[in-house]
Each structure stands twice: as C-alpha cells, then as structure tokens.
Length: 350
Image: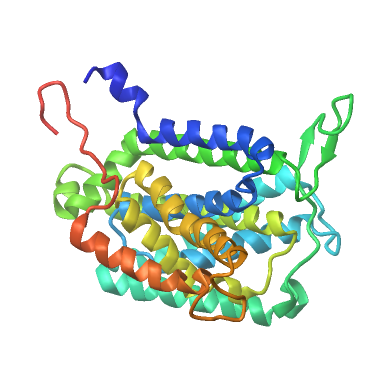
C-alpha cells in the first residue's frame, strides 16, 4: 500500500470524516445522534489526558475524575453569575486548562518518586479527597447542589447579521461542531506532543527509566510535564461537561467510576495510541449512551419489553456489556483495538 493510501486510511481521519458526515446528516435523517455524541467527545478528551500519563509515560493514574471535577468547578466559578468573575466561556476554558495543569504539578511534585501500584494508590486517594473537599466547601462549591446555571458558549455572528458574540441554546447545532473542533484540536496537540522531544522522553521513561537516565533524560521533570498535560486535558473535559449541562452537578458525579471508565477507554482502544483512545471512547461511551438506549426504545416500541421490566431493558445491561467487552478484549486483543505502532526510521531501526 502506498504512503498516500495509508495516510488517507488513517483511523483519525476516517473518524473525523464520519463525525462530519454525522453532523451534516443527523438533522435531515432525524437520527438523534448529535446530542449523545457530545458526551462521547468529552470522554474522548478525558481518555486523551489519561493516555498521556498512562499510555505515553507508563504511570498508572486512577484519579483522573478529580481533575475533571476541578475543571468543571473552575469553569463554573469563572462563569456563573453568583460569582463576581463572569469572564465568559472562552476565557473560562483557558482558566480551566491552567487550573488543571497547576493541579497536575501540585499532585506530581511530591508523588512522582513513587512507581507502579504505590503511585496508583496515591492518585486514587487524591480522587477521593478532591471529591470530599468539593462536597464540604459549601461556601464556594455549593456542596451537593452544584453550581448552576452556567452560560452556554457564544460564537461570532451566530444568530445575528453582524459579527457580535451571540449565545446558542442547548439543543442547537453549534454545540456538536464546537465539541468536534475542540476534540480535533486536542488530538492534533497530542499527536504533535507524541512526536516532539518531550513525547520521545515520555516514551523512553515508559520503556526503561534507567536507560532513559543514561541517555540524559531526567525522569521526574519529564513525568511532571506528563501529569500536567494529562490533568489539563481532563480539566478541559470537565469544563465542557459542566457547560454542556449548565451545571457542575454534585461532586459525587466525579467518583472513582469515572476514572475507571477513562482507563477502560484507553485499554480497549490501545494503550499509548491516540487513535485507539478515540475508538475506545466511541466503543465504550457509544454503547452506553447511544446503542443501548436506541435498542431499549426499539424493543419497547415493538412491545418486547416494558419500562418496568428491569431485566428486560437493555439500558440495565450496561455494566454487564462493559465487563464482557473487557474480558473479550483481554483474551483476543490484549493490546487494544488500535495498538500504538512504533515508528521506524529510514533504515528500519526504531
């Protein structure tokens, strides 16, 4: 196969083409897929953040939900009218990224000397601590009520004949395109990072930390950059999630289950593979948010099950499906659906 053909058949380009086609055809065909696909994109961003830490650098991280929560609350505090800031959607996203990166640095500084299971336990504990702190800081975070309402995004010229910034509602088409563009930019950024000097350092630390030291790579700062980058992407996912639903929700929404779901996305897609994360998000979140609800609606319309039938409704099969998928993946494709490929130089050497 020629180089041009391989480039045309790249999974990320095929997924981008499918996403654009879905956005254009969803309205005319009445598929109703654009709204649930926004959730898929949010978790794709969360998976990309975890992939930087765990896939590229080899650090088992079980606290990504905490950074997602910090991003959601940072975004809400910057935009909600009950606070004095109200800086708007786009500046708030910038603050969200900065807060996530800073939190990643603060967590990484005292813990990145740990390895393996020890680091995993520390990040898991951080996730539980962050959830409880957000729940008990009633004066700032509003406790279990969450912060709401949050303003929607605004785009230049939307809804006007001029070039002013106009907000669009929760059911309007620009939501889908906004999330798609942000996800595409995150994918491009992760690809460029992977091929950069910093990305090569991450991969070297993942493969053999001692050998990386011998090559002049200092592991601790390298890991710190990975932690900060992954945390910033997770915070961005949290900010978009809060904006989408005009509320942060309660802190319990960002529990350990969210971190495990992000890890499943990375494992199913392929550890260290940017394309794999996108496929994993579509496979895991798409099944839960799109396929099973559609199947449940069809079965109820056909009279095969009723809403009161707990065992008969496909919506209640979600975790069983997740478990079966993970078992099959570990048996059939332990490297994931799209495992990372080692790039080789002109002479064939890695």
